[in-house]
Image (cartoon, rainbow, N blue to C red; front, side, top):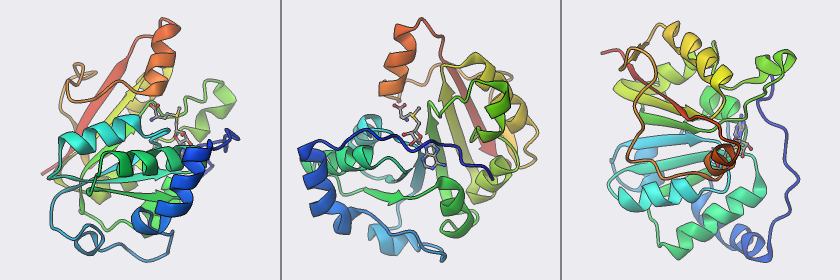
Length: 219
Ligand SMILES: C[S@@+](CC[C@H](N)C(=O)[O-])C[C@H]1O[C@@H](n2cnc3c(N)ncnc32)[C@H](O)[C@@H]1O
């Protein structure tokens, strides 16, 4: 699979760097080619939701704080964002968040067991708007087949984007992902549980519309 990201060079602030150095060993899991045991990682048997590409992690931290009985596994490649989410974990005293600093394609191939996740969140994935770059988009087959395999029966995949063309493309790809079922006939209504994200604010400033997709793994 082609890389779905371009490593952003955004420099870590002092606080992000300090959080990264001090907290990485406590809350980050090194990439490995063996599957994670979620009960051992989180110290409980609560459901696990994985977020791909949490950016600066503001929405991740807010959702985790509101849902202490759910475990959140964030996957991101952007160091400054990882430092920021680690800072949030400490600041909000979150016990239910872990982070993997790696490409989600690799993480899902090696580290996530089949039928182990209760949900997958993808908030405002990189849109790759040029046609020649569409192949880099994260939410397309065969990766959506892999994502679906990792969901428990009835587990959900939720995606939101401010790029209409990507929304249509992802809708078509997810509709063709055999293990998934669209819970709505087209796009989903706005999710009340999701805090606004940084990239959502950027999109809204450009007058973009927001498109949400909500699929469940077939029972
Ligand atoms: C457009 S930003 C959105 C960030 C955040 N979700 C938000 O809404 O503000 C997309 C993020 O996904 C991350 N990303 C893209 N592809 C990824 C991959 N394959 N694995 C991990 N992270 C990825 C990028 O590093 C970037 O931080």
